[in-house]
Length: 339
Ligand code: ASP
Image 1 (cartoon, rainbow, N blue to C red):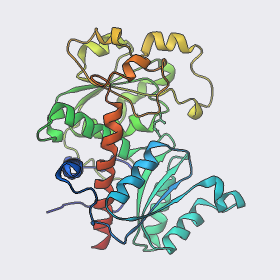
Image 2: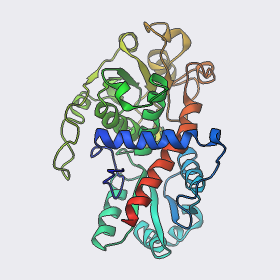
Image 3: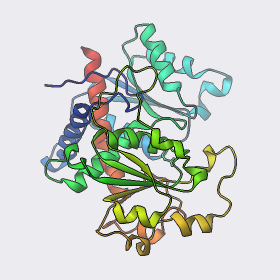
């Protein structure tokens, strides 16, 4: 019996432990389907899902489209350069066009934080039966990426049950350009929400001190935190000290397109200090998995050799896991929409 109560998925601050559990359980079932011989499910047959990416994307958009097709949905995608946006149409008018065509879930990516939330509010005021799924907005949030990261970690730590319980008390380090990362912000909600303690590691210019206060309070439009006891967030500037304590590592891209000024003067010294290599992983006191949301700058945040070592680096697994996670999100939203 589903307890799903979200009409839209904008960020993970409102997710309860039960929500994480439900998404992961469903994703686990979808992930095992090909082995059982059934390649496509009729679950969303005849339902229209639109992917409206106002900002470029490779894996998120293809992953959502594949996920929708695996549930037999009709998928309509939109590309800003060949659309009426180039004639001056606003994102709101674009959205209303797809709503008028009968789309039930709109996956939206935008370079400005808050756009998916504003659109969801507008659609609710108009009583439209359409769900917004945030595909990444500015520096704010990228919920499906954080959920596929969570799924990849639970797969690693508890291959049998794949339950978020296995993260309780674990230490997960996030290293790199945290300031400009919507993925890190969403990871912080999901990891601490599942009881993991997070170490943030990076230079001051990419990781301001006040990140330790992140997730201490729910956002202003939300009453309470649905998580009773979140894991802790600490900052550690030394990669060596972070690696000694960690059970898993998430590295992040230097997101130059989101920086208002150049905050890294020398890429070689950044790689020297924070780039991950086989050699630096020897600082860990155990074997740990390395994740990265992609796209990867080879030789900057991670060496090419490590990126290609699938015994440690789980990037390919993250990409594969993105499909069952997004199937699960689309399914939960579209199913709620009929009630
Ligand atoms: N693909 C992720 C995002 O859209 C991470 C990145 O761009 O570095 O935020």
